[in-house]
Image (cartoon, rainbow, N blue to C red; front, top):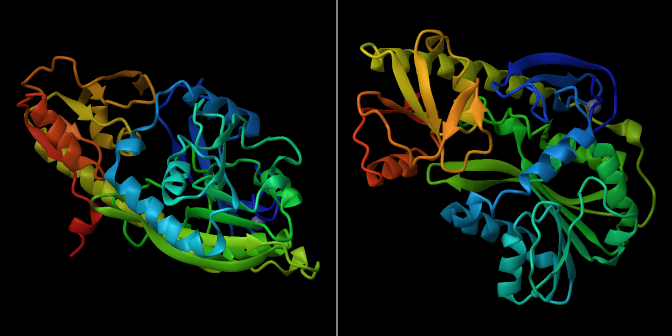
Length: 390
Ligand SMILES: [Zn+2]
């Protein structure tokens, strides 16, 4: 069983488990438990893999063209919110490193604002850019000493993906100078239950750590860091959803004054995650009924969208009797779901078979795509959860 990523305790309970309809040969497996740490209350998943499996998986994604988020209008709003959090702590001459920079859109933004000393580290894409220095390295195992040159290291949407978090944090903190900052943004798991737009969305094979503000405080205690701030901000993910994100800034203290055994147990995180699971399951039951009512006179269906919700829907009871003809997705990162083909939207569709839109986050843009491609099939959208609540 996986050790707790925050306190490394081996003592945890399994509170939930999920089977994913991906091939058994998937780098990240097809089964995951959700565990709660009995020492610090951290929530994390275990898919019985190791960091090397995750590294192989993320390297395999590097074959893809720049991610769809580059064209996402919510992207610009997210970057601006992050910039508002960090701008007081950087100068135009600061040596800034984006650890896990993806396709470097944050660096691009900082460059446009006039920042000059910009670097990015990621294994995903080879970026030929004169505006910043690019290091093609696995962020789980970059070279010792590499980060010493930087005044400001930012890690946005990264820590939740790191299987061996202890090693990762030790690598960063070892290289952190007394005058340097370490900025982190991670999803706030203690708020997953507050506004569920897509049930169980936050449990997926990529997100292996589910942090709260208290778990970030425990990280500060355990690795002897000062937390300059730690607060929840709301980052736009789509036109109808803002994701709760913990934004924190760390720095090394001038003296070693903390003890790792002062960690605080986070009881609220477990309670809130249990609420999230219960509420998500209720929504999935409702979706099952919606699809059943909609398809009464049909034997098969197309599912448009092969993302997280499609994976969760595939476990619904309705699909034991309703055949999925094909999954349709323009950015599919897998070839099959439950051995059913994932195809591009350009293929011809049988106009008698209805379409289920399996995304609540991108429902509007999918509906537009269907219209633009001239498909006139009967189409069902699933209501976002906030619409289901009275
Ligand atoms: Zn723990």
